[in-house]
Amino acid sequence: MPKITILKKTNLQEDSWHSMLISLFRGWAALEVAAAHLRAMTYPGFGEVANPPVLFVGLAFSTGFAYLAVMVFFVLSGWLVGGSFLNKMDSERALQHYAVDRVSRLWVVLVPTFVVALLAGVAVGVVDPARVSFSADNPYSVSAFIGNMFGLQTILVPSFGENFPLWSLANETWYYVLFPLLVLVFRGRSIAWRASALLAIGAIVQLVTPEIILYFSIWLLGVAFSRVKIEAGLLLRWVLLILAAGSAVLIRLKGTNEFNLESYPQFLMFSLLFGLFLCSMQFKRQPSPKLDRLDRTGKFFADFSFTLYVLHVPLILVMVYLMPSLLGTSKLSPHILSHYLVYVAMFLVLVVGSYLFHLPFEANTGRVRRWVKGQLFTRVGTVRT
Image 1 (cartoon, rainbow, N blue to C red):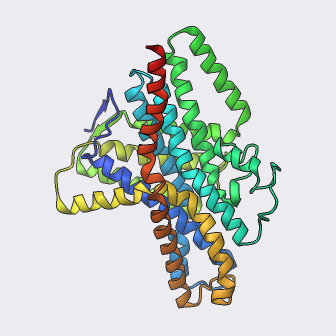
Image 2 (cartoon, rainbow, N blue to C red; image 1 turned 120 degrees about the vertical axis):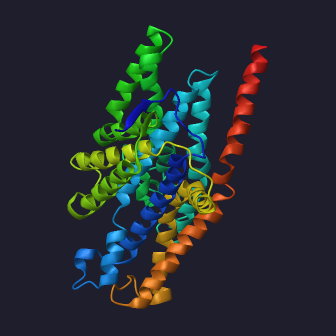
Image 3 (tube, rainbow, N blue to C red; image 1 turned 45 degrees about the vertical axis):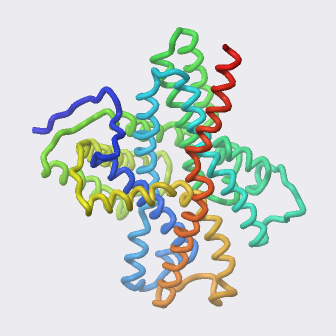
């Protein structure tokens, strides 16, 4: 029988099986989302293709898990971000450190990405560089830029630069805010702290969409699962993996490929099975050259997964704009074999371009955090002294 243990601290050790799997899933999720959007923006819709060839059926099926990939991001974000915060919440300046970590995680990547999106808009002719817009309805406006920096896309402003995957960052941003407030409601130092946190949560609930609040439960599942260790045999671990993968395939074939209130039950089912599988993998992995290579591969793609997620649409918009002049067509054909090679080449542009773009920005997030904390907390300590 499996043994279930509630951990006192979230296990973030990198030599554990679940840590390696988390890196692999983070990398896969970003690659899946980019591949899905590239296919959707370069090929005709699957329902529009008469007698689709087997190759296109395979491409359409394999790139149809984008929303499930986002659910993977939500669960892993709760596991890593929420679990890490719970580990450190009793340390000095825990909330301040958490705030710097979360803001730097978002802004170090978003600011340069928004600049690229703006340049892409100029390149494709949808932005006039001589005019500055402040309209809240204009996806290239100053208002949209600022609103997206604070997670207000899909709430008060559109996604900046028509970068539609940014809808999930609105969710993430508010989950980053809601979780410590929720902790303060139960662990606040005084009644005043707890009441203030509860009022803040109420205000956020009134501001954001019902979908953001509902899917916060999936993010919280990740937090909860980070404290659960399931000691099970190989058979049960395989059963959990097969059930999680099977639910994903079932959702892909029969479910709703949308993010709304009606699709919540299917995504909740998948998230539960996925989280339980990770819980069953919370044990140390033995050193192995093959596993070490797999671990390095996962970490490689995970390290720039955020950049790939937010940057791929501006890059696709530019490539789609260039397609008529380079290929003589605005859409790839499912019936022309060479067009699949074009798709692969475009996908490689997304991956390689995102990797190179992450080097001066996302790769230096830790350095930025240390500098900001040094400036803020050193000065505070000096003033108090």
